[in-house]
Image 1 (cartoon, one colour):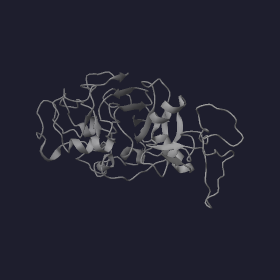
Image 2 (tube, helix red, strand yellow):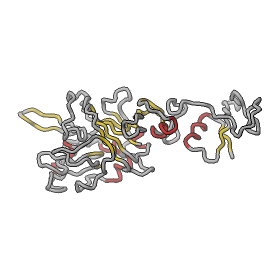
Image 3 (cartoon, helix red, strand yellow):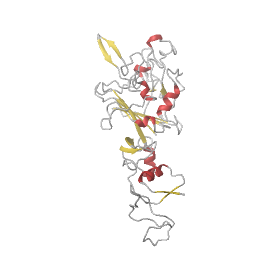
Image 4 (cartoon, one colour):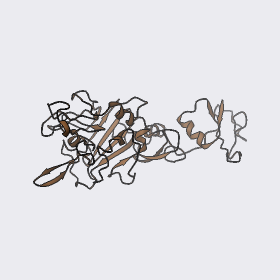
Length: 324
């Protein structure tokens, strides 16, 4: 059995030690033991006359709150520390280097433990577009900042953190939906989205069921089910019925009814988180009315339920996407 002797190795051990043994010893660059009390060969600290079964405790750290002591993801941190406070934590899903993420720890959202991956917002930036649709899977570009989560944001956690369950939280309405069991323990959101393929033809009943939340259907929200990479079906006309004017989308989406009713009528404009095939450089696209061009930001199920009540273009209307 080998001994853990460095702070980095100790951190790694919290994620899974294998056949390593914690010794509580920290070795500096010169190889000197910097521990306050170094254990002797029997595992007892020098000067310790106790005969208990435990060896010396590992060097303490504020697990998940310190770049020197990151967790695997927000759920891991919650399980190890019983944290209930939302905010910035440090994770290292792939061992290193660690990076900060926003965690939703409060139990209100189906128990908490959520790692925020993305924010799609009507902030006027046009980031989550059809041209940038692969931000949802193979394009590892990140953007935004944890201090401005009302604006478009993407964390590298989208490509690294396990995504068995998904949470979508709409702002400013507070409406939320959890979809449990969407992925396997090995899946990330990247692998889930890329595994579906582009322009997927759903039948309107074969999506992922909502397992918790406050989301409900309406005349324009055909279902609470979650879909990915949905093809435009022009209501009852079916897939590929729209020719070169298809309003397909990419990434998470919902089945909505536009001018042709349910199902999947213009999902890029009415039920997406931005990507819209017909206008590849705009989030949600636009339409003409009374001689004016009207920007249309669906914000997922926000448009269908008339939840986007914030000032358009200000970032007040947004969807937070988190996983655990």
